[in-house]
Length: 503
Image (cartoon, rainbow, N blue to C red; front, top):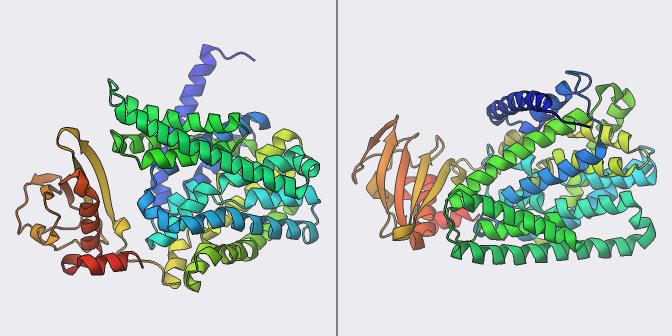
């Protein structure tokens, strides 16, 4: 197959138009609470053989491109995760990603065989591909749902960690390795791949951070590129030793994202942009793979029943069993059960048996596609309502305070950009009442597009942007104080606010 310059022109025209439309769709999805993946999937279906007539049936190419996109998305997730905030929730997140996955696979597999009448191989594959939550779906919805950090941390950690074991499991089942090695042998293979991948990711992350701190690159734009490349190096190294590349890329990105590296803010912004591009391409491609003509009433019926089992039986049981390592009130456990959003990951995983030629793989792909669309439509938009009903929503959660940092290298200081959101209780507080740590100060207030140099009696308002200069060694304390005032207003006390923030 040749690819000439005219085809390139057409590809760039269509690709740029679709990408711009997808970017604009983010605003719609953020307002409605719908994960943007649904919009992108439907765009792919509209461009496919039943719409614009673009044919795409190459399962092996979809498998490869899907894995590449997932690696990018996991790298972005690790680079933008604060270890300090995620660490308390990491045991529960790890339990959900391992023990919870095992429970979910077992429940769905048994139900698929005995209730839905699917063959054992297809039933176990259905359980495996639908067990992981999707990082992109979770992050996009939780941005508009103010929750305590232990809940958001657990959901984000789970979605970042559960891809690795499920990819290994689905690959073993599709290749017939489970039958060859037995159940215990398969468990050993999964354990080895996870440990090897995570270990290599840790080594690459630590080594990469050491090199980056000592490298004097001639352009600031090379630093984000180098960090992203290091995460892919971790993925490739893990895969080369038959470890989990996904575990390697996430751990390496987590280490690099929390290391004191030059131009960290620029690196995270670059990673977010690349991840958005990967998500758009991934979801549109998966939409192209679907043929609406194959969605018979039997497929839709199976998808509805399987989704009910997953949502109301498998997910709650997996959360309940996983919470043994970190007991929580029933309200929070219920919310965790409802917030197990599936997205592109289950659909990508179905390309593994599809590419391997497993009997019934096409039927599995269609079934999982319908499940993802229907139950993301059900759970995504209702999360804010469920959070309020269960009384786990936090009106003044620090997510209303957006902070961006730019390094001031010569004086070892950071410039923080603080946006006062409509829910922040910083409204009405005077600059002097912020009581920032010694050496930190508000250098500028931007209000209604105009700038002003504040005094101690300057009153802050909703919609203001503050530029705060802080010594780097005091940055954490400065951010902590700003979040406390955002939660508690001018009367926020150091000890009291910290206690509220961790409950």
